[in-house]
Structures are given as C-alpha cells and as structure tokens.
Length: 244
Image 1 (cartoon, rainbow, N blue to C red):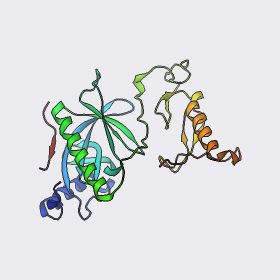
Image 2: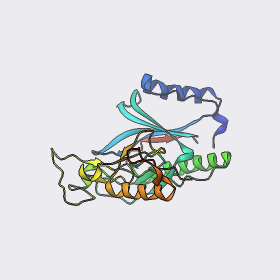
Image 3: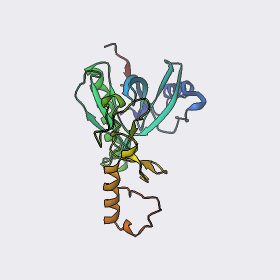
Image 4: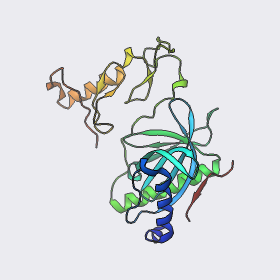
C-alpha cells in the first residue's frame, strides 16, 4: 500500500480535485489516512444499457459517478466501502468484454474495462486494498451480497411466469432479492430487507414465498398479516491510472 502518501500535499490536492469535480452534489472525501490510488473510466452494465462511469479507487472506498464533462464535472456520486466488496471475474458477452462483478451487501453490478490488461490492473489494486483493510480491521470477507439487476433488454417476457410479454404498456420490474426482470402480477408483494433499504422493497412471488418461509422458521409467523414483513440480516486506450 501507499500509506506514506496519506498526509502529503499532493494526495490532498488530488482528493480536493475529485471533490470539486462532483461539486455540491457529492460528499466530502478527505478524511485522515485516506489515499487516492487511481482513477479511470469503466463501462457499467445499467438497467437500460451499458454506460461509461468514472471510478476513483481510494485505499478504503470506491467512488463512482456519471460523467458530465470528463475531468471537470461528475454527478450521481456513489461511495462503496471496500470492506464490503467481493469481486467476481465474468466471461465476455457480445456487448461487453473484460467484465467483472463488484458485489456488496447493498448493491452488486457488472463493469467492464477497455482491455484485459486494464481489467487485471483494476482487480489487482482492488483486491490488495480489500486484503489490507480486512487485515487491519480483523473482519472476515463479506458473504452476503445483493443480487445484480438483470438488464431490461435481456428478456422480452417475465422471468417468473414466462407468459407475460413486455411492451410500452406492460412495464418491466426488478425483484430486489434475485434481480430478475418480472411483470407487475409476479411482483405485487414488498418485503423489508434492512440490509438493502429502510423501506419495504418490491420482490417477485418466488422470493416473497422464500423470505416468508425463512421468517417463519425464525419465529416470524407470530406477526399479524397486515404488518410489514422483514428479512433479518445474515451474519484499448488505457483509461485508468494508479499510484505506484
């Protein structure tokens, strides 16, 4: 790691530059001991279609956002604690190459790099930061991860009933438990999953039954029917640069 950079002026300036690029829409990023290790543009697999996103790797967090003007203005800032991150390398598809999944307890998503070398570099730096943090804190690697959302265009029919066809009038929905694309009839229920959100979230019919069964096994069958149900938490041109 590059802990020797933590209290240097150049590191402070680099972090301040990132904060300025996000402006008032972003959170402050400068904290004692934090080091900006690298940055780059990765393609994120979004619900509608893959989109370029700016990523900043710090020694304790991963920050990403939407690009308004590259190196000048970003928005929609997301901050992910690296202690909660697990990585999974994925095979190429026709649409995206050099892919891997960033998995956390709250959100999981797929990204791709411009080249195989760049993917290896990102994964190597991420894994090193995660190992360092877990060793430092004594925590175990995270085992509970949110399911990634399957892109809308991956299917034209509901992935649960396999009967309903999506159209302009028949909307696609996503189950927050499994990430499947489902129709309204197959996702009428909501379930409170505190690890993901303080509010009840839409789930598909199969996941709802599974969550209800798990809750009953844990004593949740004493609830009144009208109460909210709760899931208990379980224990090409190179576009990236990193500090050496």
